[in-house]
Length: 273
Ligand code: ATR
Image (cartoon, rainbow, N blue to C red):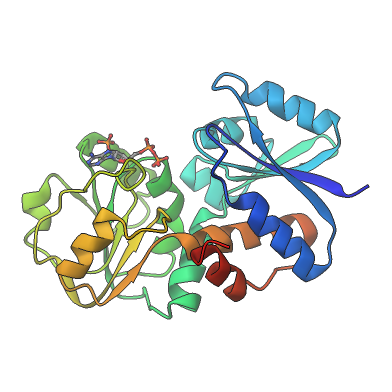
């Protein structure tokens, strides 16, 4: 029987993870069984228990359970600890290993796939929720010149800055007027606005020449954030499809010890196949 893996979330119906991991399995000839698991909002721990009883080996964790996964992990990686969120679980004997591959996925997409250098660049992260906290440490490790965190609820942005107090290049923005005085080379939308079809209100003239606008959301239509960025003259635009596939590839590597090739799969997911 193949080893069993799953993605767990609520909702889960639109998840592309089964498609991606089945493609990895075929490509690497490592047989796995991968399913999408829906759990009630208060049913995460019970779902994990049943999955483990049925010899489940590992899981991807998506909204809204990344913090629950962090809490149940008995061993945490530095990225998971920094993000206080876990998107990949590995069950081994009595241990639950908690990883966070979102940040690595983002960096691999930006640096390797899009060939955009982060080092010495000015970054703006919009949002200070779960998605933002997962990407801050990996971005800081690329040595940007500054990293501005801007959030509608400014206290949450300050909390993130405090979490990474050993870095002295983080700036919290109080409001859009503050951002308006600056230009950025990389602007990342880590708010949930694209998910709910809303526009993120940003000041004009903040995209520097040669800048990259990156929406963590993936969508087959251009997101409102990317539309705005295009109008504002951002040179490069990307949604989160590449990050989605790259974070999955890292999970697959943690589980199976082999890192799948991603280029074709990113292209297929973008084309909706
Ligand atoms: P996720 O796990 O997707 O990050 P989250 O933790 O609920 O979800 O965070 C959602 C983020 O989107 C937050 O930064 C939120 O801002 P607040 O902290 O002020 O709530 C941001 N967000 C959601 N709707 C927004 C909107 N209409 N305009 C600006 N920011 C928004």
